[in-house]
Image (cartoon, rainbow, N blue to C red; front, side, top):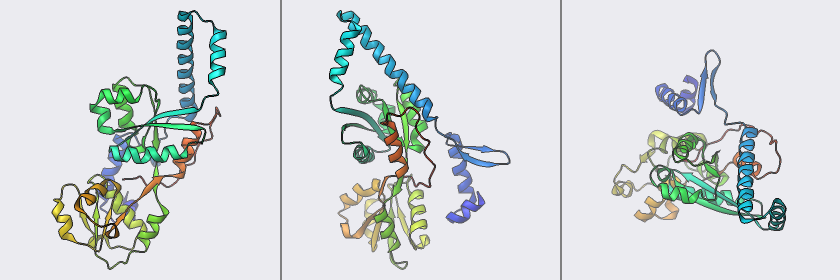
Length: 297
């Protein structure tokens, strides 16, 4: 913890608090004498087994319905063979902190799918999972998979369980785009900068600036949703560095594009590999190696 605090230039107590929160959310676990480790997600083979069981249940329901309609298994088989040539669809749900964020990553997930697969995304905010049961039920009439960020997986899974919805919740990671890294690296250390973000995302944004820019963070003014809009305009910096979630706020204030630098994230290569595995026909997927990933704010 002391070493991490030194690397990030923050108080060791802040790091300890982050460790406790991650442990409470079930994302890390401490082992006496060894250290703290990321808790692995459910084994891929176990998840594949659950999906195969769900498929068998659906087939059983189809056969029972065929019996009720007076058709035998041969008719069902013939119908399935005939329909198998149809274009493949992939309905799925994306749940993020904001609906705008869900729409952003739904587009990116759709872009990773093979050409022969049609994406049918349903976008929800995490708040809707807790307070809008009708919208959630509508989204899951066809969808089985739920995509969200790794840190949201426990909470999203708990919300779906409370609603009695069967879904495999897949944790995604994102990484800073190459263009953003280049833009941050080109910033002059003596410039006047403001960082604009949501209160929950500021720590991530500051970490990004520490890693990819030469800026002195003590000189960077920080604004969140708790600051009055006029304070942003009065600041009048050389450049507004902002997160994705704060973009609409700057739009409303009429801040010009040439005065803004968004910290742009996209799905990580690791996340794209996981998505490819989900649609793969293999029954024993190869484990994906862990890589250094930054989570999108």
